[in-house]
Image 1 (cartoon, rainbow, N blue to C red):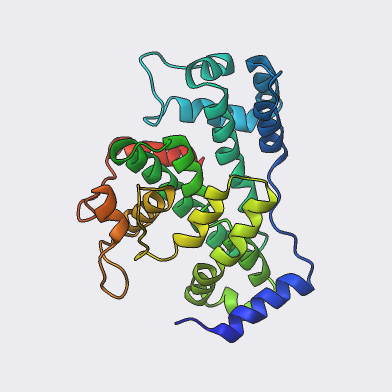
Image 2 (tube, rainbow, N blue to C red; image 1 turned 180 degrees about the vertical axis):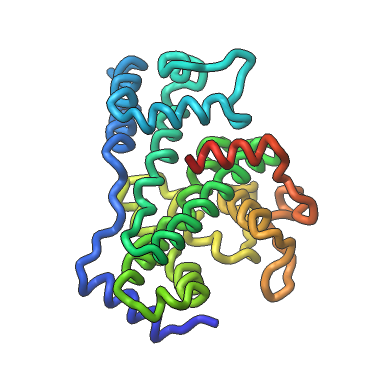
Length: 269
C-alpha cells in the first residue's frame, strides 16, 4: 500500500540533501552530440567509443547478440557502425552506459540497485522484441525506453542508503520506488533533453491498465514488456492489460527463449 507520508519524506530528503538527479554518462552525451551534428561522421563516433574500452567491449557483445546479430560476426567498432548505423549505435551507447547510474555503496542498497538494473535490462530486451514483432515502432527506441522506464527510482534508492529502516525493508523500498519513479523519472529524461516520448513512457508505464485511443505507442510496448517480465497477464486489481490487447501480445505465454535470454545478458553486462 502507498504511504504518502513516507513518500513525501523521501522527496524532502532528496531536496534537502541536495541529491542531484542522475547525469547522463559522458560517453553517452558525446555520442548524442555527434548524432546531432550534421557535419559529424562515422569515424567521429568510433573515436568516442574507442575512448571507453568497457563500452566498446559491451557494444561488440550486444552487436553479436540476437538483438542485432547478422550473418557475419562483428569484431570491431567500424563494422558495428557500418552495419547498425550511427543513430542505432548512439542509442546503444546511451543504453549501455546507463549501467553506470545504477551504483551504490552499502551492500544492501548495492544489491537492490543491481536488481533494479537487471529488471530494467529485461524490460528493455522485451520491449525491443515486442516493438519488432507487434508494431511499426522503432525497436531501438523501444529498447531505450524500456531501459529508462525506472530511472526515476535511482535517487529514491540513493536516499535509502541514509535510512537504515529502509535498508532492512527491501519490500517497502521497492514499493516506494514503484510509487515515486514516474514523478522523478520524467524530470530526469527532460533534463537530459530526451524526446517527450521517454517522459510519457515513464508517466504511463506504472499503470498496467493504461489505455488510449489511436495507434500503439511506446508506452503500450513498455507496459507489455513490464507485464511479461513480471510474469503477469492482468493488472493487480484484476483488470485486463489493455496495451496487450491493443498490440495483440499474448501475456499468458513467456516470450523469453534462449535467444532473448542471451540478449538480456548482453544488455546487462
